[in-house]
Amino acid sequence: MTEAVGFQYHQEDFITETGLDFSFMFVLFAGVLGYEATEQDSADYAEHIGDPDFPVFADGDKLLYDVTPMNGESHPEVCAIGPDMKILECWSGHGSVQTALDKIRETAGL
Image (tube, rainbow, N blue to C red; front, top):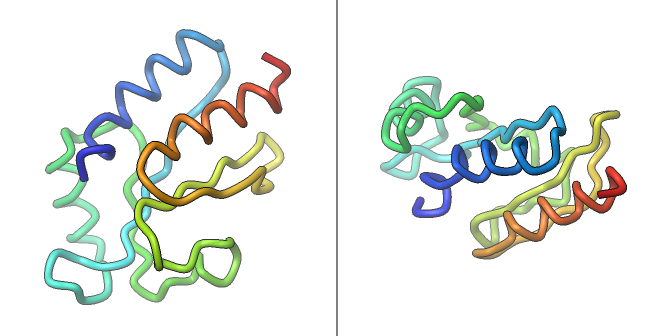
């Protein structure tokens, strides 16, 4: 949760630094009570982290588990996605946001 609050600032700083068209996309798999995430959970979470200008999705059916290396065993999980919408790489654990941003810089030749 603490890292999610900072995503808006990371996003703004990254865009200013690189000039890249960039956005986070945040996905909830479960709501506060542990049930499958719903649209309301996404709306509540977005409000809780300061109503960022990036989307907060609900994936209660865990469909992303089928199309990404994410498995929910470790949090947070982060994937960097290139301009062609292909996954560049995925990481898990705290601090992985900076690693993902570094990968995007590298892929962009920065």
